[in-house]
Amino acid sequence: MKSQKRLVQFVVKTSKFCNLRCRYCYEYSELGNKAAIDLEQLEQMYRHIYDYYRRLDCPTQIDFVWHGGEPLLNSPDFYWKTFDLQKKIFGELSDSISNAVQTNLTVLNKERVRLLRDGFDSVGVSVDLFGGLRVNQTGVDSLPTVLANMDRLHEENIRFGCITVLTKLNLPHLREIYKFYEKMNLSCRILPLFKGSFDGQHDGFEISHHEILNAFCTLVDLWLESERTVMMIPIVEHIEQILHYYSPNSKPFFYDKHEWESVFLVNTNGEVYSYTDAYSGLSHGNIFTTSLESLIKGASHHEVIAAAEERMAATCSTCPFFGSCTGYPVAEGSKEYNELDERGVIRCIVTKGVLQHVEYRLKQAGIINPATGELNLNRLPLSEMPAALRSPI
Ligand code: SF4
Image (tube, rainbow, N blue to C red):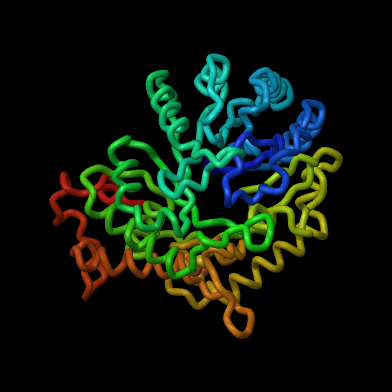
């Protein structure tokens, strides 16, 4: 039997340098630093990645996600050269390589339009729509520029998705945010405010776990009401997880960090982290100088894996949704989603709370039979159902 392709992402910090000073940015203290990864370092990184994945039995899709600072401040030529390097080094695996960029979309010219259209495989735009936190060095909101540049991408037929960060300042505008993505037919990821780069950075717009939970529940309700399916992550994922939970004989999925780690963050200096441990003392080692195999099999990686397994054992093992939810938010100890109880054990506030809400709403709508737990998708007027619900799992 042919094994399924697995996915690994390398989030590469090209440079911390940025033309904006978004007030919540977790790189804030470094945004003036122009130090950047160079092509020789990338070449070493590619060789180490290629050496590791070419020897595995299962085929692997390798995604490079180019981050900053603002990655498009780097010259387009840098990216064209690195794409060429990838082809040279990955050879027969080149078809399994893709490149995404996460941009503030404030710097766009003809060359960058060409790069986004013909170079990158996907484009993510950071835009909050409300709150005025994404400002330049003089405090001017970047939103009008970003919206104008989004129109330009549409005119140029460049597909893109968006990331919106939830803060106290855009919480009152969830409906408008949802309607924006619905009307524009854009996929998006809603991310709760991430830890800052210094104490007090988030004063005035911090949000609690319960505010995040309520916001996601509101977005679930908007999604279920909507005329058109909006590919809004994590809402769609949570709906799929509940449909999976109620599908008889569905194969359980568990996050197994020991077996497969799917996201690595590579800092400008080559240090590699699990995503939520970024810049902590928990680097797995340096990918510019060390083989990926040594990093993955190394003592520091094993320490991180053991901690993740302990967290899942303490929290997820008693959760009814474990197996439909992989346990990833607890395993990775994402602080925005979880809090600690008096014994230091994680309470899964956001993910479990949203799953419970989805379950409740699907029962209310008759999609799940509350007495038998059977899924009743066929008895519903399918034309009125969002597509993801019409073809679950
Ligand atoms: S909902 Fe939370 S506790 Fe339950 S399996 Fe998922 S991450 Fe673990």
